[in-house]
Length: 583
Image (cartoon, rainbow, N blue to C red; front, top):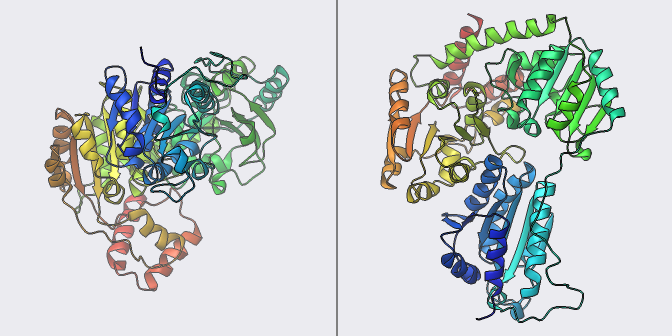
């Protein structure tokens, strides 16, 4: 029986770790690994993408929506380079992803040979563990260390294997220090809890609060029951960071929804009026939305380096969010006063009335809010929603309401465009049988629209809604509202995305009439297999923040005065929306 090759040892070890899906695009630098994957195709799925960036995004989403390790594989040189954006997305959002890359021949490295790009050095910043396999006896040690690092630190790791080394056979040769079978394919997720002294201090602070806000993020996604119990005990208001949108349902009487530019006015009001802030599993980055007054703060985070990063913290609890909350709840008293909560609930009723009015508006051109609002009512109670970055994120954040066991994610801290389509690939493969909804702007979709062919190839039942306004919408409004400049360089050449979908073998629908919104969305959702809705929406509809600052208003006026070409259409739309809000 022949000795096993490095590529065989690699793939076998991955399978022993439970890896059953790899996202990749082929190349000669990884052909040795591909042959082993071919032989083992019944045990491990190779998902061929059309761009390596999508492989990394899909691996990130696979980790987000399954809680397991995501794996992507790319060839030497440019293949590895293309992975970087998706890998940074995983790093910034704390997801365990293993990237495997090829390299040129080991004895030609450093001699200016073709594709001799030192990926080890390139990946130094993105990868917490970054190692080149040097031979057969090195494989298990490196794979085990990489995967344990990815899982324990919730981060990106990288393994590089030169092309010729993939073919080297195990011959029994190993260093005297490398004891056989000393490395194990085993990992146990820790659930640390702070000390009793720290928990008592936090409980004392919270019990003395009268107007309590609970800011919940992605670290609290598995702590829904605990967050709701905390809200009931404290009579507090739950505000959700975007990555924590699915922490609790949006119809809960205890939440005012999101915070920040994409959030709600009631959330901003509650944040500025509270006297006590509990940060649970979040280090929400936008400092300007934290309380302006001196608020007593408790922060719970698995990463001690995040405690006190954004806001002055009086009590920091380093530990698993769910387990820490369970221990903390035992120490809290039932608050009787609920004036603060009732005021927030009344504001939220008015806010929801406004969202309903926007979501049922009959105006033409079609308002993007109508598309998101009508979609929200029709999707499954356990669907997975993948949102792109841009103006579409505002409509998703406000109008897609979380119910029951829905999951939701975006490219959070990296805020990269083009994430949602490959996210949908990863989500669908991680959760066979669940409905997956992909929300894109036309700018983000067109950057990696080739991945629609991936969805078609594997017949993933993803429903894709493209909000088409023929512009890089978020950048346009940033130029106008944040900089006071007229828009420039943001116009997009129109694409018929429904026709493109059909050319890929995917059902394509066009939606441009608000009266047809529900009908078209129902048709798409009922379509077997994947479907695309090309929603042609009003390009002048601005994603207004919950509260507009005087500086934002001044910049808006300044941009109009300085020659914004669409100023009259924009002003007309903004004024009309303002009147609707007042009414």
